[in-house]
Amino acid sequence: MSIGKIVRWHDDKGFGFVKSHDLDKDVFVHISAFPPNSLRPKVGDDVVFQVENTPKGLQVTRARYKDQLNDNVSTNAQKGNLYLELERDDNISRRKDSDMSFPKKSHRHRQSKLPNNKPKGLFSSLFGLLAIACLIYYGYQNLSNRSEYTNSQVSKQTLANIEQQKSVNNTNFKCDGRQHCSQMNSREEAEWFSQNCPDTKMDGDKDGDVCENDSRW
Image (tube, rainbow, N blue to C red):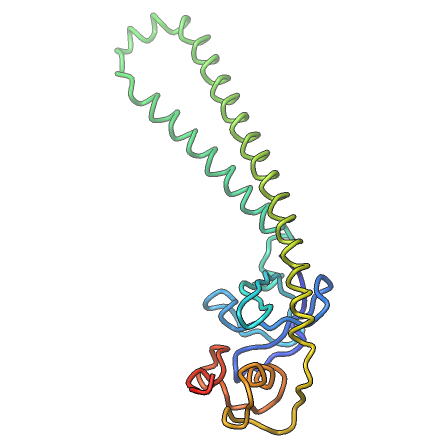
C-alpha cells in the first residue's frame, strides 16, 4: 500500500493521477478504484492506494481516502485486530454453549455440591482464558509473518512496476489538439492522449478503455 495525493482529476471523464513519494511518476487512477458511494475525488485529496501492472501500464486498482482510516492505523493492522476479535468471540461463544449443554440440578443439590464446584469453576475459567490468550498470540504471530511477507512482495512488485512505467512514459507524444480516435495512429497514442491531453473524445463510456470499437487495433 502507498500513500499519495491526487494531483490531477478530470471529473467529467472519471479519472485522474496520483502522486506518491514511493513512485517516480504520477499514476493513473479511475473512479472505479474508490469504494462505491464515496465522495467524488478532487485535486489535493490524500489517498491510500494499491498499484498493479495492467495491460495498459501501471494503474491504481484500489483506493480510499486517507481520512477514512481510524487514527492512521494501517490496513494490515485493522485486519489483524478484526481477526483477533472474531477469534475471541468464537471461543467465548463455544464456552457458553458448552456450559448450557449440562442439565440443571435442583436447588438443594446445587447447595450441597457448591463447595466442591468452586475450585472446578475457577480452574475452568483460568483454562479458558489461557486458551484464548494462546489463540490471540498465535493469530498475532501469523498475521505479523504474513504482513512481512506481503510487504516484501509489494516492494518487489513496486520496483518492477516503476521500471516498466519509465519505459511506457518514455514516448514522443505531445498534445497537439487532436481529439478523436480516427486521428490516432496507434492504441498507445490514443491512451496517452486520453490520459494527458484535455478535451479528448476517445473514451465515451469513461471506463478507461479508449477507442475500444476501433477495428484498426
